[in-house]
Length: 211
Image (cartoon, rainbow, N blue to C red; front, side, top):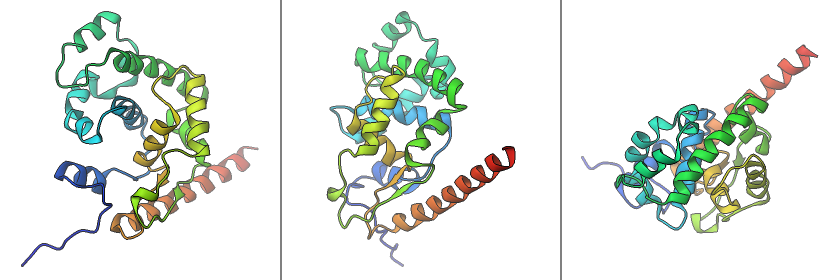
């Protein structure tokens, strides 16, 4: 019996990309550790391919202590010097320093908004944006929402969070569903988006009760 061919977005061209596409990309995430990880990785990708970053992901998890926000926020310049010798990650001092700056910014965001997730998801009103592109090539590089998210993150001192990086981040953590219309994971992520709307309604009900 031949294995059924899975309908995927056209960019999932390798085994690693396909695994990431099938299990993570476009799935709504509200886990602060994962959101911080994707913020760091999307910034690290600037000028590189996503395949390069995926291949170094385990290296990043080791180097950045599984993306524990408070631990990374305490990294010193000496620690950055050590990371610059680590071939398992992208050895770009600006990008490494930005990860530490971003961890400290996320601490402030968390203090003011309760969580990074609360802040991030407020830009899409708690509900994933649903698109239905015939081809992934039709997806934009940035939008007004990613512009606003970029501006919001920069206001807290985040680095490597330009609007294009922010849009890629939004795609990755499911703030926007940019799976192609003919990709079987489009419907799966859309269904998860409906659960997000239910979560938003529950939040509003709880707020009304509190008032």
